[in-house]
Length: 574
Ligand code: GLC
Image (cartoon, rainbow, N blue to C red):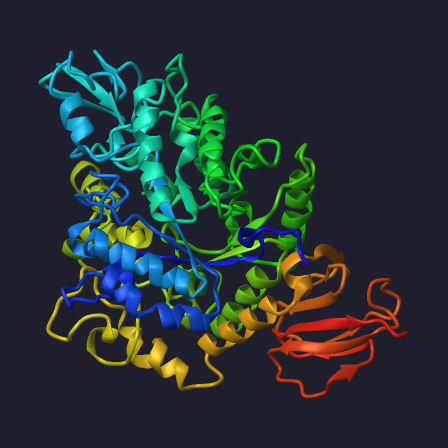
């Protein structure tokens, strides 16, 4: 029996509620829709859901600007609909974690409405106020970080949009109110939280200005145009220097400890995963966050065997060094904030092959895995062509900034905006080949346009009917993972570490040892493992191969097809 907790062996599936399933036909996803799709999710074979925010919100940041933490956005349904969804998920053994946004609220939240009304109201000190802008800090979404409020004749601070004022976490009342909100959902039975943007909760107490000789819009533009190695390096340095005083500050650890203690009061192993890659936020391994994402894995132009090996060596070493020795990895390649895996890590010739390799990578590496809705059918980025379609305010702000202030031609500005906006990876889930991809009735205009490639087989229904589809491939891999103790729990042992074409490793648990080989190249490979300690002299029992091998057991010389995914149990001869 494994000693691991459910969230360590789980595969999570992120649902972006606005785009997942439209149950009432108004062009926007909702709980009725999600609940209707729970059988689909169960059949896919994932263990848990992470829901992006479903709370009431004016949607300046697509729900990450929350105006009531203990409620459901009317367009997503009622509290009753939420409870039905949660209950139906649990009935199918699917756990549910919610998004908890601590850094800021919406400017329409009653806390802020009160706070901004005067300098002496009971919530006057719930946000970060200053008489004059104390420095040149920028908001990472829309320029100046300090916004004026005439009622107080003061400025408030916001790391994100001006509609997302930062809470003052030095105020114990703020903490209490937010912990009450967390308890509200825990009492209802949710299994944990994904913590949004936790690094930005505190700012440098000295309010040290940044030293970058540009505004945010200028820096974005500079980044768009940077080409030479020097420019690219300078761009990274500028981004770091512009914001380094506004995140990663002291204080977050104590908060995480408090929140962890609250979760630990509840039965059922509730869990926290942080939107940060800093392993320090796991504390000693059992007193802060349960997981942080392995974002460095994603931070590359191209996934290569070398990149993954380096990432794993570094990451697993850091996790092992936690004093309680309980650090557990958490891998993902995509979410609602970045270009879709299929587009981002594909290449024109081998998109489909690479998508399969990347799925296999996330599902066989040591650690908890997170998938993003739609990746299982190979959804791609959808480039918007008209500024009126853009819903991600960060995108429309940038468009107007460069057209109006910098004189960039609207066509070029639109092309840049389509690239940088997160709308491209948040379009409605493609369920069928019917108009609107079966997401909404055909006469309805969906909140973001549907990617027209739903007509070309990129939809659930067509792929369900096609045994060789990407969807079936995901299901198959998920079944293999679920039924393998080595893939769920085993240690990671890299093999043939000098090889550029393929990534080979063993996952070794007490009762099972599994060899995984991912051929990232377009070459036929002939691999010899006879002198490899972990594998040599054993038989291999195939658990999965994208080449549809029929042979049950083969010797230690292996012929692999281009881009093959090969997973086999290592059967030691008696
Ligand atoms: C996180 C979310 C992102 C949001 C931001 C502000 O990074 O993932 O979508 O815009 O926080 O809340």
